Length: 125
Image (cartoon, rainbow, N blue to C red; front, side, top):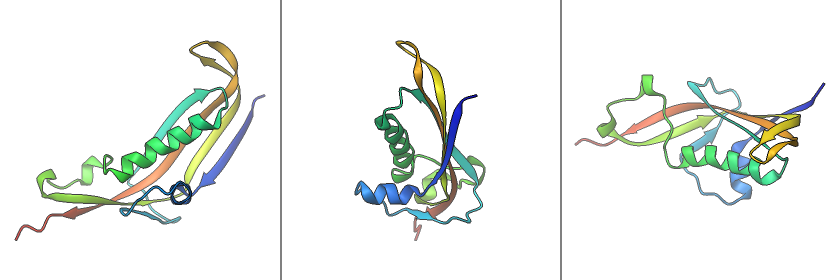
């Protein structure tokens, strides 16, 4: 049987440590999400790959490139999007993985972030 690990992470703490500026993201551990941002990857266990996947998720939110289509208003009226996020889950399974160079010991990771959007409309006056 393979070993596995599940962790809950506050994405904003990681962004604070790396001095990544954000103003449109708020952490609420009890958020009721509209949708989830999910990423999955397999690699040799190097921490860089994990941090790169987390950074890719953070970039989606910082640059307002993620939204929930069923609740989105008419796009020309949107000024920017604020996000409320919950605990990011990092699920890691250790074992043998298929990499471009062949099959090696490594890990598969799945990152799941619950998100709720708050659309800020332009002042149309």
